Length: 401
Image 1 (cartoon, rainbow, N blue to C red):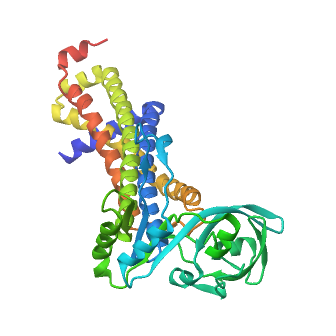
Image 2: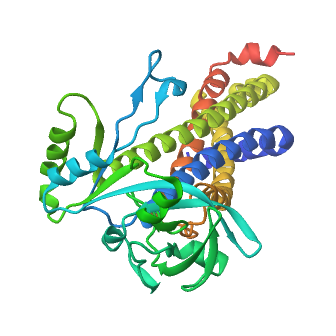
């Protein structure tokens, strides 16, 4: 029995080599499909790892943002959105609601920065001087005084522009002194100061006048009190209508992870479509092969070859194509997956952190999944042609022209 199977395996290899161009094109479809599934799976997995490694530990944080109001018309039309903010009075009400927990109102904007020949718009975070130590840590220099014109600069921005404590820069057309360089903090759900300049509220209002706050960050001392703090803010602010939205760090992080999960499923769907197209190619190749070898099948059946053996011979062909294409696609996906990850990470995270470069267990699982799908779809594509070949009438097959 094993000898007969070996013979039919040899026949399958011989036929694939005889029509190597056709076989190569069919295998190319499998390579592309497996490459798409595995590399996109690696991309999604690595972005989650990268994001998880970058997010600062802010599990004690509650963020209060203005509730988005909508003008008349379609609420999903961005043109109908009304600009909203948190007034000074509302910030005081929030501070009263949270009790002893620090409540930190802030403004996030952008201003023109110039340092030597370097210039451009950079993020600016506006905080009351007394609130800065609650959110930030200084690596070099000190915090600015409340009435001073000194500013703090993020660690990554300072590194890129070669700025140190004591340097002078032009911000919003004003000459200011950098009194401190912040410690690197990483991405977070409250503020991201690494590529930003932090200024005092007094300096900003002297320059632009009074403005509403963009958000209020609440630092909760006891994590078990987070639900109660959120409820207190909602009860204080949203008693008559929705004025603010209140979320804690766990909810916001969960939203990020759900988004990445959805992206991963979408990317795998794209790879699945590519693999489905390649399986149609294999189906077409196998049907052509059966048609061209009809007389050969008739001869084999007339000298005693069983239907099962004919079936196996053609399934071997599909299996060989699937294994070869899947293995090549799997190997290529390692390079492609990490190359795409590095490119996307640089674009999305703007230089934060370093994209993973080694193959971990999750990445290996994505590759094995792609290889498994490739081999499985190849076998499925070969079932009908193999069944058709095995059920040819020997007499009719011998007469086939």
